[in-house]
Image 1 (tube, rainbow, N blue to C red):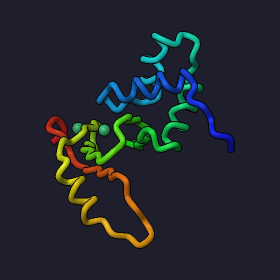
Image 2 (image 1 turned 120 degrees about the vertical axis):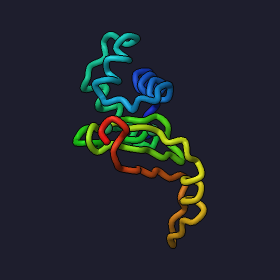
Image 3 (image 1 turned 120 degrees about the horizontal axis):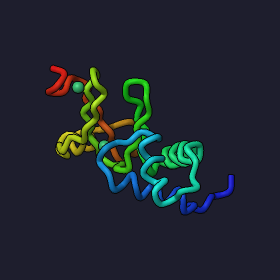
Image 4 (image 1 turned 180 degrees about the horizontal axis):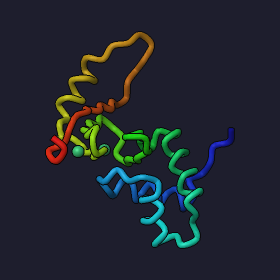
Length: 125
Ligand SMILES: [Zn+2]
Ligand SMILES: [Zn+2]
């Protein structure tokens, strides 16, 4: 496989994801980048999102049967409501740091950690 250069479309998608904290779906990303890239199609957005996730540049999360994307990659702690699917970043770097410090697996060097807590949000409790 030849290394691909970042297309301007892909760059735009990545920039958008890094600028928001909403964990958008592909459709939401499409609606947002379409303003700057009127010719882009939903299929292109999907393809680029999957590519970025494969390259480890973004997170692809499956929450309640749909895919959500996140431009914030490292040492991430998420809280997910299993009832309504609400997804939030938890600002608890201690947990991620603790996990990194105590991680041990032969032949594996972790670079970052992604933790998901599942439960119910205040509205669904
Ligand atoms: Zn909820
Ligand atoms: Zn996140």
